[in-house]
Length: 309
Image (cartoon, rainbow, N blue to C red; front, side):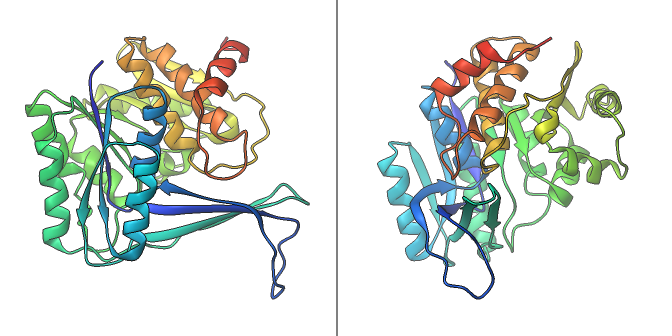
C-alpha cells in the first residue's frame, strides 16, 4: 500500500469531557475526561493508522503542551515528525452536556509561527517519501495564506497526490493554484469560497463539477453534516443525503471522512465507493461523544447498514 504523510500546522491537544449541565458562572463538575492528539492532519493520521495505512504525521510542536502532544502521539504508536516552534501548542476543549445532548466546543487560535518554522515544515513535507500528502486544518498566525498553494505544484512534479481540507483564504489560494488531487470543504466552506448559497445537493454537485472541469482539483468532496455530502470526479457526481444518525459529537467528523475516503482510494476503490467509505467514516465519528474519531469496527458495520441508493 502507498504511504501517506499528513501535514498539521495548527495541531492541538483535544480535551473532552461530559457534564450534567453547563451554565454560566457555576462551577461545572465534569466526568469521563480524555486527552487526544488533535488538529486536522493529526486526526486524519490517527484514523489511517487504525486502518493499517503506513502513515507519518508531520506537524508543528512547541512548549510544554507540545511535549505533551508528542507524548500522546507516541502512546498511540503513530509515526511522527515534529517541527519545533517557540510558541506553545494550543489546547481545545469539548464538553458534552448530558441533560440536553448538546456539545460545547472551545477552539483557541493557536501559536504565532515564525517564518523559519513554517519553512522547515514545508521542507519536511517535500523530503517525505510518502506518495500521498494530506494537508488538513487551519493555518496559525504567522503562516502565509498561500502555504498550501506552495505545496501543490512541487508535489505534482514529484508525482505525488495532494489532498486538502482547509477553509477561507487558504482554500481560495490553493484552488487558484490548482494541482489538487482531492479537496474536501464543508458546505459552509464551499459556499464561502463560491460566494453564494446552494439550494440543493444538485446545485452543490454542479458547482463542484465545474471546479473539477476547470482542472483545479481532480475530485471535490463537499461534506454537508447530517445532510450527507457530494462528490464530483471526472466520471460524474455522487450524492448522499445523510444517514439519519443522531450526532453525539461532531469533533473530527470531517477528518474521519477524509481518512475514510483516502483509505478507499488507497485500496483501489472507485471514487463512488471511496466516497461511501468516507461518509461511513464520518458517520462513525459522531456516534460517540468526545474526540475518539472513527473506529474501524463502526465503519465496517455502517458500510453494510447504510442505504447507498
